[in-house]
Length: 353
Image 1 (cartoon, one colour):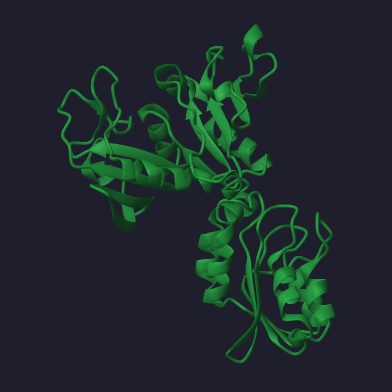
Image 2 (cartoon, one colour; image 1 turned 180 degrees about the vertical axis):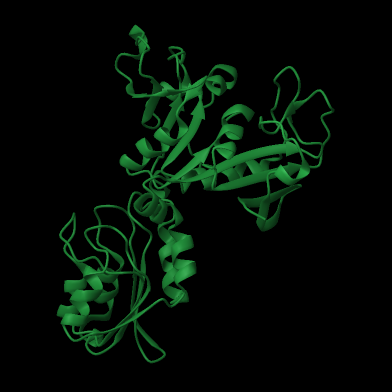
């Protein structure tokens, strides 16, 4: 199963909105066939593994990181393929909550007389597809907020200059987080201040599926000529439902979201993303949006790069958060990973302590 999970990770940047799945067919310690799902619309992991195993799959054990599908989508059901191949046992890491599967694949296999074992390395399998499970089970994507700060907690100078706090290694590392995401989320303030591209810069056009750019632009202030309006990646502008659309944005994909105070309803934004098959959201924005996501309980993970530099007390803060009355109310985070990236430190943080 560990081998199958490593195979599944080959699709980290390419399978969305589908989950990343790997399969190993073995007899005892002998591996007969392996496969992984490369991208939506192409064969699933089980199909590749069965092709490689051939007739030797009969009576063997298939190790699959996610419950085999039981419905006709873009490809035929993998449960049927395993049954037709005559495998004797199927070991499944995690059940698939997708409504058209959700136990149906397991039931098909058992009805055909195939032994099924569930739960081997379930946590690792769910972690690999954390966005897929979030979208299906919570009806919203997994939200990963990227931040970079100096040792004294600043993200830029008082005049707004922020390039570059971190080094080249950290900036290259960010590209891999962008590539694994279904969408990159930012706000019109960042677009107006920095005119970012919000695209993935990795070698090889087929090494990733370009994530959608989603800009929260309540008053539709994104100017003509902004990089996010180019054709390098699809872009959506989410705006208030009572705003007139300027002429230069008439042909841009847009969606109206209800207001919430001075901004858009962030919970509604997340549910909109879930309806658009977005599994993982990579957030690159200023302290207002990032702080609002954390305060609303919508930031599932923070990727924080800490550079060995000092910017002084007048620099811009990491997050804008509501004031606290006492230390008992402080925001608690737990560190799930620490890693040195060039000269910078990368912390992976999740809410809760």
